[in-house]
Structures are given as C-alpha cells and as structure tokens.
Amino acid sequence: MSALVTLSSSYGAAGGVIGPELAQSLGVPFVDRAIPLGVAEDLDVALDDAVAHDMRLASSFLERVLRSFASADPGGPAPLPVEQLTPDEFRRATEAVISRQAASGEGVILGRAGAILLRDDPRVLRVRLDGPRDRRIRRAMQMGGLDEATAKRALSKADRTHETYVKHFYNADIHDPRLYHLVIDTTAISTDACVEALAVAARSRAELHAG
Image (cartoon, rainbow, N blue to C red; front, side, top):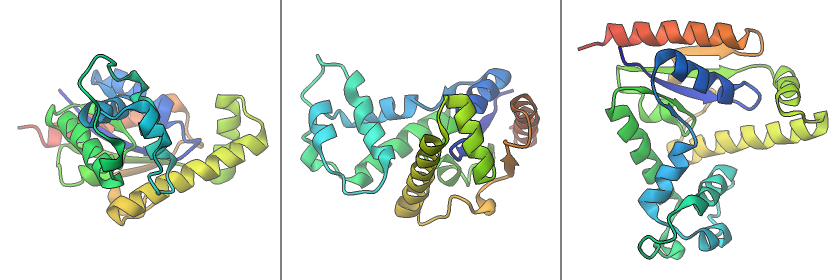
C-alpha cells in the first residue's frame, strides 16, 4: 500500500537521515533535492544570472534553489530572464512540484512547507522532527564533524531560514503543533526507532484513507 508523508525537520533533527530511511522502509520515493531540480526545470533560469540576482528575502533556501540550477541542460531553450522572476514564482514552482508528487499518492517529502501545502489531503501523514537546541547542536556536531561554534551558527541560520520561509509565504508558524499529526524529539529516540514508528503511522494513515 502506498504512503504519503511530509517531514518538517529542524536543523540537527536528522531529517536528512530519517527521510530517506523512511522512504526505503515504505517503498516510496524520497523527495528532497529533487524539488529544487524540479523548480529549475519549471522556471528554466540561467545559473549565472540567478546567483547574481538579489531576491530580497532573508532565506538561504531560495539561494540553494538558485544554485541548484547548475544542473540545467545547457542545450535547452533560452532561459527566462531572471529579472522577471519573483519570490512568489519560486514558491509557486515549488508548490507545483510537491503537488505533482502528492498526486502520485506516495512519497516522503522533506521540507518545503509540505505540511502546509498538503494539510487538507487526508492521505498525508504530517510530521515534525525537532528537539532541544543543545541536543540538536550536539547531533549536528556528531553527524557533520563540526566544531561547536560552527554547529551553533549553522543551526541559528537554518532555523531562522525555515521560520522565515514559512512565515513569509504562508503566514504560519513552523512550530505550531496543529500543523502536524506527530511531533517527535529525534534527539531522544534512536533513528531506527523513529523510522519504525513513522512507518507504522504512515501505513496506518494510508489504510485509514484507502479508497
């Protein structure tokens, strides 16, 4: 049976590990880096112009989207002038990619405000992965081989980016528990246990709304 899950993960909460493992356990696609590439295909923006363009939004997420355009086909049609793009166009393109994945009825979608975009879809299990700041910093140090100062800076930047993106585009609080069916402190539970619990919940959700 297919399953559809959105994961919202704070920095150091191991979303990049739990997401792929959960997708493998459920036998469905994992959708993370594929989203920026999909946005690139939809918008067809030249990398050099895109990187130089100031989107005037305090979000490194959009910068990562722009840099992902490096994979665009150089032999394709002429790119859209970047001056014509707006942050809302990036948002709409991202939403289109997520919607296409949701239409397939299966997948584990990490980030990109998926819980908000798909909150009215009864098939979706919406999950927030989080944990206390100090423990997420330690997790980031262990997983990324970072020193404490670097991990603290990265956490502050990532958390602020995610909060800003959701607030700016959707006027929502990423920490609002009402957005999610499950909120898990992944710093207090092993990765294997998190994956197992989420797989059970996702299958239960799918069975409940099958047909």
